[in-house]
Length: 403
Image (cartoon, rainbow, N blue to C red; front, side):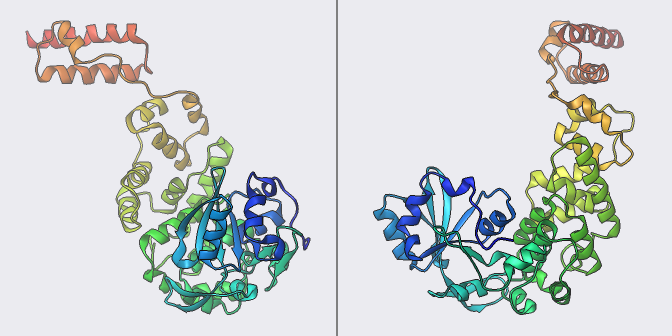
C-alpha cells in the first residue's frame, strides 16, 4: 500500500484549498486525519472530512473568520469546530491528549505533538494523517500495514484503550465487519471479551447508535457471530443468540437477491427471537423511537398466510410488508414484485356516499364502509367505478338486513 494519499475527487471540493491555506497547511499546521485518510488509501468514497491542526481552537476560529469562512463551534469544549464550505461541513480539531478518562468521556489538554494526538485514538487504521500538500502519510502505529492486511488493532494496550471509552468494544466489531478479514486480532478480541460487562456503563442511546451502524455494514454476520461467541451481547442484548445470527444471514441473502436496500432496523429484528413483545422490550431498552419500535414489532408479528402482499402493504404499510416478506424465509421473494412502483391507494369513497345511497346515519355506516373496503382490498384495489358497484351491493345488503 502506498505511503502517499492517492488523488481523488474529494481533494478538489470547492473551498477546500482556501480552508487549508487559512489553517497553514503549507507550513505543516494542518493534516487530513482519520476516515478520509483510511478510506482514501483503500480507494473508497470519502464523504466526511476531518482535519487535525496544531493551532489552538480560538486561533482556528479567528483564522477562519478572517478568511471569510463560516465556522460553527460544534465541539469547542473538545477542540472541534466545523467549517462550512459551500454548504458541506469539515470538522477541524486541535491536536489533543487525554488527561483523564472514565470510560464514557475524557478530559483533554491541547498539544502540538502529532504522535501524542494519534496515541489517544482507538485503532491503528484510524490514526493515519496525510499532508494536504504533499499527500505524504504520517503513520505512528503501523496503521498502513494493518490496513493492507485488513487487520483491526487497538493502539497500544487494548484494555487501556477500551477503559478510556467502553464504546470502543462495539466500534471494534463494526470496524472488523467493514474493514477486516473477519478474523479478529487475538489481543483485541480477547480484550473485548474480558471487559464486555463495561458496556453496561454506557447510555442506551450510544449503544443503539453504534449497533445500528454495525448492522448497516454490508456484511456484518461474521462479526456478529464473534460477538455472540465472545459474550459481548450478554450485558446489553442477551436475547441475541446464534439462531439470531442465522436469521440475520438469511435476511441479508434475501435482501441481496431481491435488490432491496439494507435496513439496520430490519436486521436488528432478524437478530431477535421472532416475537413482537421482545422487539418492543428491546426497542424500549435501546431507547429507539416509537416509530422504530413499532416497525420492529410489526416485522415480527405472525403474518396472514392467505393475505396478498398488496393487502398486507395496505394494512400495515409498504415498509413493514417488505420487512415481513424478507424476514420470512419461506415467503417467495417474487411476492415483492407486486409492490414495485405501487403505492397503497386510499379507498376512493367515504361514509357520506353510503348515506346518499340511502343508508341511515349511524353505526351501520362505519360497518358498511369497512365491508366496502374489505371487498375492495380482496379484489386487489379496483378503480372507482368498481368501488361504486361494491358500495351499491353493500348498502343494499344492509338495507335488506334492516327490513
